[in-house]
Image (tube, rainbow, N blue to C red; front, side, top):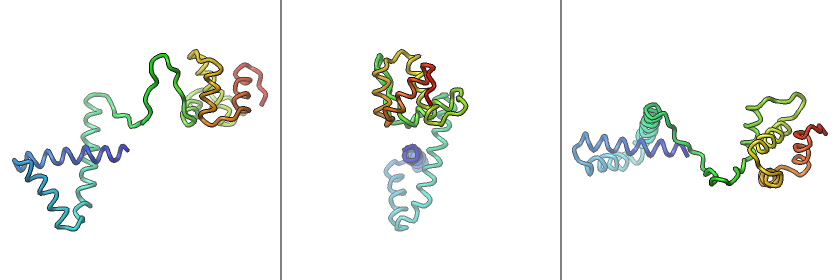
Length: 155
C-alpha cells in the first residue's frame, strides 16, 4: 500500500510541477497522456519510477520537517475504554521486546508476554482468552500461558 501511495503522491507532485513549468494545467496533462500514448506505454518505464521516487522524496521531506510519518497499518485503534485486540504477529513482536525466558519456545514466550502485558493493563481473564482465541491460539497454549505467568511452570 505504501508503494502505491508514494507513486500517487509523486504523480500529483510531477503534474503540479509540469503545470507550473508549462503555465497551463491542461497542457501538463496532455503532455503526460501524449507521451504514454505515442510511445505505446513505453514511457511508463520512466513515469512510474520517477513518480515513485518523487513521492518517496516528498514524503521523506514531510516526515523530516514535521517529525511525523504516515502509518500504513490498516487497523484502527480501539475506542476509549475498549481493550485492544492484539494480532498474533504483534504478540510475537512484543515477546521479542521483553526479556526472554531461557528454555522457552518463541510461541511460549509470546503468549506469556502477551498475558503479562494484558494483565498489567487490567484486562480480565475472559477478555484475554477471547483475544488469544480470536488470534488462533489453542486452549492448551492459553492454559499453559496463564499457568506460567501465575508461577506454575508446567512446560
